[in-house]
Image (cartoon, rainbow, N blue to C red; front, top):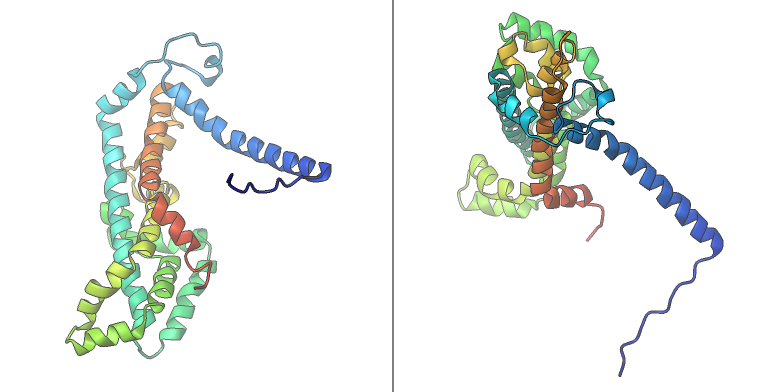
Length: 283
């Protein structure tokens, strides 16, 4: 017997036109987002002297711009600085936020609710408001133009603490009590129970932190006052202010700066999407 086929749903002309308008708008938005990126990618493989000459350029594609970037010690130093700062901030932020989230979720101490509310209230304060006080504090500590000055002020975030706190609070207390009965101390409970169970939100937090730190501009611009301490994003921007510009090298550097975030998202995409939808459906 032939399998039952689903009945076809006929759409009215109004529904067809509505769907057509929606898809057309989405395609235009995607093209508007992708075209500048494709423009830079194509330019990075061309020996151009100006962006106006790109459309009429008949020169073959070449890797000369990328070879020049990787042969430049300054560009390599910028890339290394970005890797060091971003990796350190990501790892330390996940550790600090998980510890804080565990404390707020499972450890009872006086004033915890007030402290959590005060911390979340800082989310409403724009970064520009705290920029000057943070810089003055870092300057008085002698951390300007150092890796510590680039890393320490970016550690932890109220949103990350709240994310970890909300997830850890869903872990049954009975599980933790059983571990306490078996003789586990709070640190052992954290390492052997909380950390394995909280891997998914930790990865989501790590991806967000990595992308934000890698693309951060204003704080590294203020702190990295010498060329050898600049991150790649800041280095590209400061190059654009020079009188003589190597546009081929700049476009190659721009494409290189996009690769790490794309790789990280591609690797952890499954965890990232699971983290975004976690809790949206009640069991």
